[in-house]
Amino acid sequence: MKYLDPFYLLLRFVVLRRLYKANLSPAQFAFLEDNTGKQRLSLWVTLIVSVPLYFGVVQSEGNQDRLLMGMIGFVAVTGSGWYVLSFGGIPAKLLDAAMEITFYMWTSFVCALTATLLVLITMFPPLCWPALFIIYLGAIFSGMQYDTTDGMKIGLDETLQRHSRAALQYYKREGIHPDEERNE
Image (cartoon, rainbow, N blue to C red; front, top):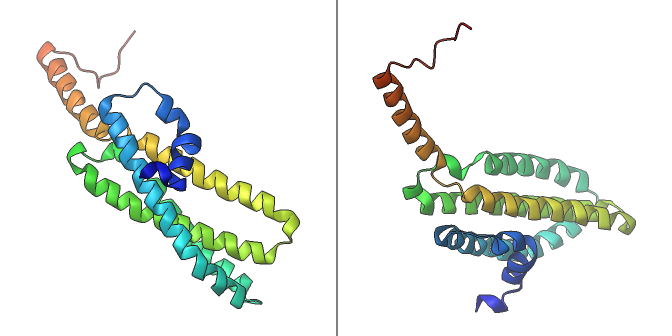
């Protein structure tokens, strides 16, 4: 069924094609598929939300500057919040919760960015639209790629911390003091 979904095809064969071609472990591939599903759902939500947003923007003619100022806040807060989240700092056992959190943050960001694009389209002449779409798609596609590659390091901080503790125990046992400066 997913092969009939245009958003899945866009993600699988355009946006994330290099990741799908990479030599991934079974766990990484499973995450890639799960995350693609998350992003696919986010794109559908954004499309559905865009229809009333478009009509709302068109009916607000003359107030686009106010709409734009309001949308800048949403884009900044949701975009910053989403980019601050890192799968590396999340324990592997909390992957499902992390997927849900990133779904909500990413969907909020994409919807806010889409609303901003719709406002800008009504403010700029059609000659500027290609540049607006390139900026929009660049932000969306790179965000999806970032989210997916970041997800490949789920639990990394936890692993690094475990190895760091083991190294410190070894150093202590061997009388090595890595904190002290060397006098050469």
